[in-house]
Length: 601
Image (cartoon, rainbow, N blue to C red; front, side):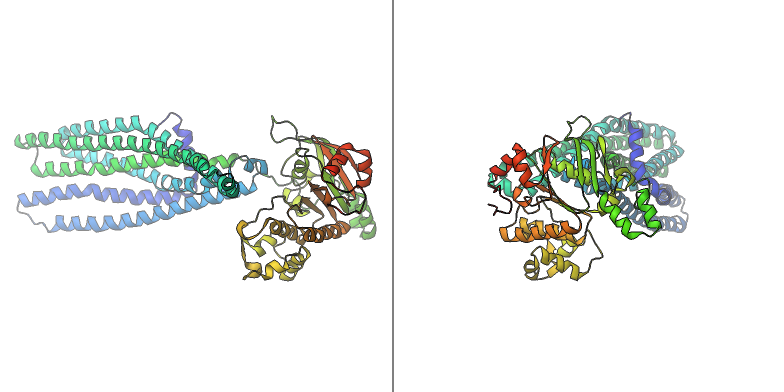
């Protein structure tokens, strides 16, 4: 093992540390079982001595039987204890990683392929099981058994012990030389398994694109390249392990041959009894057990360390921290009016304060990346419809990422109800918002599960109402299990996914509804119905729409035109057609009538 084994071993121990009492019990049971096993050759010697002296065999044979059954019982208890401990270690690790993933910032999670992250929860935790739960016990127990066997062998005959120690030293040198290579090969094999998972997961998500482009074989080869690399490193580890085992087996058998020769000579010289030679040979045969246990646990330890390091990488993911102040912070003037119970004036004052505001905001997706938005000033009133338009790469989605606090600004600040974002917890901000993504993925579970994400306490009547608003009633009635029908990307269309997401957002009754081209995959009639929902919502709250299709925003109260990460212009549709060339070009490219209220093509 490498010189850096101590810090790497401490990473693995961090998973076992919470269960150290159970580990101690397992070690105690293992040592008891080992002691019973070490006693057996000595009792066998007494049986042989009794035969030579015509003494009674009852006591030594009874002792052997007792050792057998007690040893079996202790071993059974130990296996159950350590097996259950292994499952608890795996569960704890999975719980820790899953919580860390879901609490991490969005950029930190999206930086790695999803499949690679999944392997840390699945295959890596399985490798952790034996290493964290039983390898520590196995190593200590194996060392005690090895030392105990050698001590008892020395008690029987020091000359034969010297022969045995030479063989054990040879085996130890072989393992010390080969183990670092085994560890490196296993670590590289696991890394390629992680890459395989990432590429496979992404390919399956894009299976339609892969098939349309006749790229099945090319993607298969790309995925299998990592599988083959993992197998190659695995075979390399197996070869080194096989060599280590061959040396160990040959060393022990060579020691047995030497012991037979030297032992026979010493018996002939009268310096050793035959029963002593047989007992010594039994210890020699038994040496394979501690050597086997040590080597297996060292190998498992190497795999476990590599897995533990990959799992612990999740701890380095930046997480969304809670706000420094609890509750929902209020402006001092709001708090004062609330204490005076002047609710009418409080409501008037609230109307004058924007629900959202961006002041000179600049943001980038990495410390060395170019800013995605620069110096953005934007005010979102408490009611009304604000649309954000612009060419691809203008910074529209980044704007939403900032508002949703998926991304933190590198300059300027955002305010909610007049108070800086830093005074609010992430969850408190998002409780005031609802978001409909452009891609609108389906969350695993039923239709009801998907709708209740925002408001778990919502009633069935409320669910049916919002489904009717987005024209999904007929779809639900056509499902055999209704709201409890399981959803998958395969059994709902893109337009239906968008409407499910919009229904979920409407159910939340947010202060601000954020729509990222929420009607892009809808037919004309359904789009008109959804637009009516948006207009209705804008009368009681704020609606902010990102539009790649300008037909969805021509009647917005305010249209914000973005270009190259900056706000280029703002105003109503008619004003921008006259004053801004980029907006006019966007309108003309989509063949939208310049006349307000005219039909949109």
